[in-house]
Length: 579
Image (cartoon, rainbow, N blue to C red; front, side, top):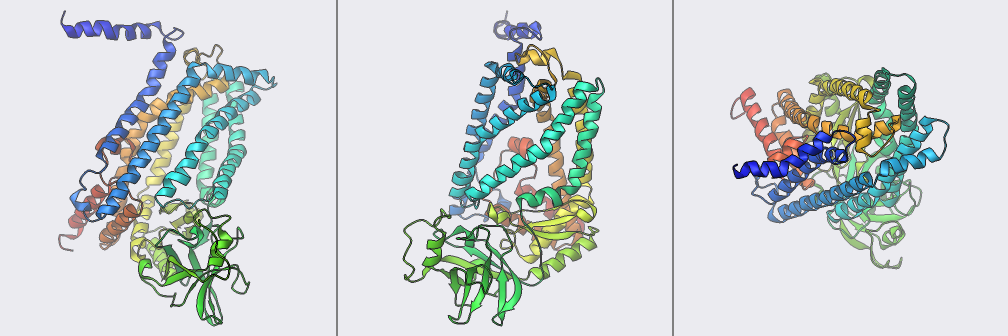
């Protein structure tokens, strides 16, 4: 026979024999493990291709976004993130498959059963809890490295260790408050109701999801972020141009309040660490005795620690990089050294002169921005929305904006890092895009699909919950409800990988459609939205040369060059060339 037949006979036949053994055979776990590994292998290949494209020539439409130094930094950041992701994925796979083939699932089940709970529900909760807690513990060093090393080294991290710990404790609390009752209900239905239990599980969980969908902006989001109503008046924004000064002073928004000493006064309203006293606010106020503007802790008349002073006029608009220069006091640096790792080096004595550092500020008319955003919302039919600034700078320098909620729960949310980055009209154009998602029913159709997808998933769960084929693949001799839920979720990840591909395609299509909606709302939004997206990509040090396969599998948003070209083509088609 030809060599190819010999290869098929010698290499493929063992796999056919393994498959022929079927569930319960010695090779059955290997077959199932291979199926689970396939999506991971595809993702790995796509990621390696993505890495190989880093540093490629930038598309013509994107030329000039980065200077050579900035492009080199963007490439290093992209490679660092990819390498980190590859290492973590490899670690996770080794741990998971080792646990699987050392028969960790039946061993853990034996431990939980040995606790001799009278209820299978309680046993199941302990089983799921141990797996969840163990996964969190294994992820913790990776999360710490990503936050405090990787993101920190490229100037993005603003998270303090206290915030990091609090966020995880809050996440744990939410898991206990919501997860334990819901999981108990799921187990109860499957144990007591019988064949139609999957349907009642579906109804229960979808009802909870719908309620949470409405309450997320007012119930969950404020747990992790401070939502500050965008006020009238002005705001002063600080920004660093160097590294050696306290991070809590950089990227802060000072909102106008009642005048003090016959001069304007501004005050922070976020939850960021404010210096020596955690939880304190900062004020920007005029000091007549020294004829200087100051950034001080606490209220204007509170006599708090002065961290920085400025002799120039701070209520001046324009680019932050060209704004008035602030001078930091050594007293302030010494006061924050205990809690701020960026203020390194020996603390000088209080009598030392002031130290000049790279801190500047600019003044923006947030009242004018608020009026324009509300006017656009009403004109486009996005009625009843409230506008909030999110203190995203408490955790990261990355920026974002989004609309969320329905009806009277509608929220327009702007990260505070967005305000110093974009011009007023650029932010308005971004809102036009975000409103487009609502007015084009992207959120609504996504919710309908989510419900339909969940219906199919829970139906499949009901059919395979106590399947001996699934149990034997994980070396479990006796199928149980809580084991079935966990093991089914592992196998369903293969289906989810396939389903996710058209979902990401739909998501990219929605982004194009929302861009078109913004351009249709105002012809000037084509240039403004393009400029805003470009600034956002540049600040985020985004990769401008992604690999097509990685985009196809992973990107929820189209690459920047594709979006800019599509917006310009749509603008030309609607308004004509030269407009």
